[in-house]
Length: 313
Image 1 (spheres, rainbow, N blue to C red):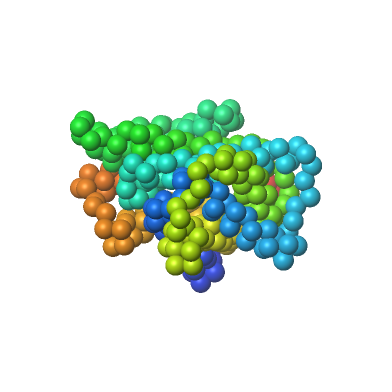
Image 2 (tube, rainbow, N blue to C red):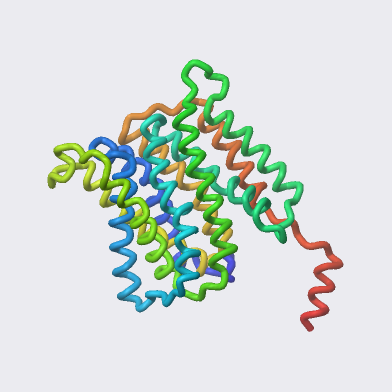
């Protein structure tokens, strides 16, 4: 795997900026789309657009994977937690919290991933720094939500949003367990995953009341926001993210976590006119500190390094 220090910035920085902008603007697009669409319709719309783009890319790149039923089942399980349930829960959350708060809570995803990896993958040892990171992250969530505000505590919105990030944590862990032996292009796998997620929620979404009367007019900002959400945040962003992983490594790619809430907060203030409370950025800093610790991996002991070096010779 390449390291960022060994690769010129121009090889991965444009993709990094693209992913940060795509995922950072997703909360703005969801907020606008909710003006005409139900939360599950927002989820279905972004999945339809995302699947369409990814399928075209997979066919063009000749990256359509050949899957057994077992592989398809594994992708389905991962898709439920990575792009099925979360895509419904986030719009539900944004009916009760601002796009700013939703984006800041979304940054807790690595904490959930570290937790579920520790719980579901026995070979992954939990180290002291990671435990401290999880505790600090939990305290940061409390600060971020203003847990002392009993009268207007956003309990429902927070529950939906943290449920979404917990799903991401489970999905990331399952992907490591179930998909590690599937040899296929990330574009092809993403296309299958997004398509399966779309098929899962489509029956429920189609059974909900029709969108607002102006939802599909050419001048509808809600419709175009939904299209932008699907085309950027649900398709191209996945491709760009894997390009970062390939060029600069997983650690550099994971640092997108820190950029997304900054962009979402700026858009929430400048475009939506939302208010940023003092405790939200403070809590976000605490959460990010916890994320940094939870993602750390201890360095091997000198004698282990020496043993590994000797065995490699």
